[in-house]
Length: 136
Image 1 (spheres, rainbow, N blue to C red):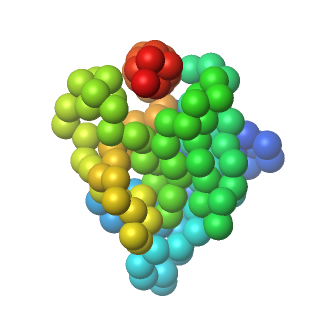
Image 2 (image 1 turned 120 degrees about the vertical axis):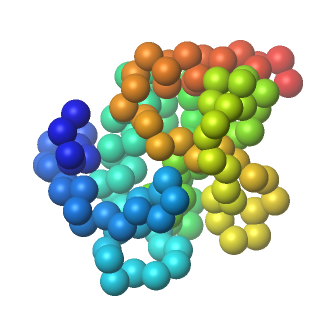
Image 3 (image 1 turned 45 degrees about the vertical axis):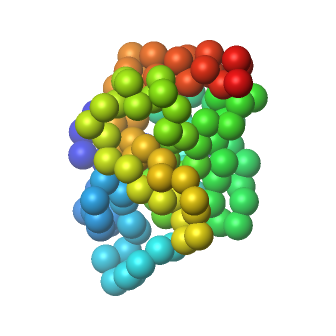
């Protein structure tokens, strides 16, 4: 994919230059400092890419989103960043991924995913996480 995010509903292009990169997370608006609610465009970009792996849904909560794969909670989209639960399967498949807290006060250091466009890798990851969550 070229240097732009693609929102699925509107099929509009959002220039990556509008995003400020801090670590592996994207923050909209260069004038913004600190945390902010996830943009609709970034949410749509993540959702569009994850849905290539299967049934992915989100639920909006306080400006951020919980992410579900086949009905199981697998992570969050917070501050324009995708965070996944640190399950053994996810840590095995993404051994070099950075980790971070999705929101202030979080007690779980989660996996930060920065390459959601790799459909094959995301499908393997989400399916492995689903299997692990199914036996918990």
